[in-house]
Image 1: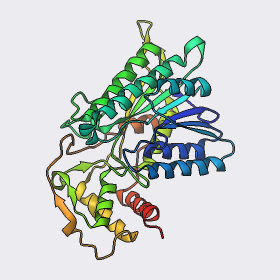
Image 2 (image 1 turned 135 degrees about the horizontal axis):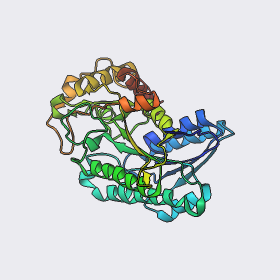
Image 3 (image 1 turned 90 degrees about the vertical axis):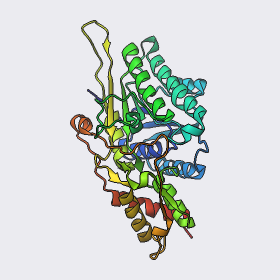
Image 4 (image 1 turned 180 degrees about the horizontal axis):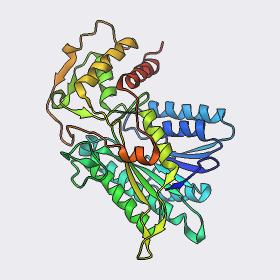
Length: 362
């Protein structure tokens, strides 16, 4: 593995107004300055744009506090190849972190086109831009890090999920696009000696997260007095991973690129890696909901006498969902000395407090 010092580097982060992207940019500004960060996001309305705008304003504030950091944001789309080429030509990023993607398993059933454009066409454009960064003997991109997903494991029976497991049976279009990203990255790593690392994220949660995620949707519904549906009759288990743990994992991985070397045939051995980033501790959905409700009461989002039982409905599994996600994180620990460790109660407490400030402030 080749160590990379992020200081004085140019880092290009796609999806920089997204949940993981915005938190990554903030942490890079706080801990890696002097650094130059270029962000890209299309600010689509898949979920409440005001949350994306709030995240961007937090980044602007943070960038203003760090005078030795350069930060530039582009509003645009990965599918716009001309824009991407312009960014690469103008800024010459050494590290590329591709977090832009159309997210969500269920939405991929109703709106597949968005996934093809963003997750396939968009990712192809990123790979091409990285490839051409080496033209004319340029040093080019030193490391491409990109978001994959735990959903690539499909309905694998063996748990915990290991990156050594076969992952060729996706159960949603979203999962299929993420697996495709891994395959495309492997081909480009082999053909063009492009160091790439894919990260399979497991159920990321926390303040200013995605409103389409269960914990956020549950909170909205409970506040309105509506019933929440708990799928698979509560027998789902999820490896909930707190946002700060995800970001720390991403930054550590950014600093360790797969080594470029030649094989016995004289051709490059693909400088390619895949890691799970998960909590390695799956939680039962019913327990998760219990802790969430306790923390919502503690944060005064809900009244102390709220009748949860009257607002819970146990329902069957949904298409495209899997009963258990559980990350084997031994490779991440071995190579980067890191394992996510934020407890569920701590993480949900921070979410509940943010939710109150964001939605219920006076």
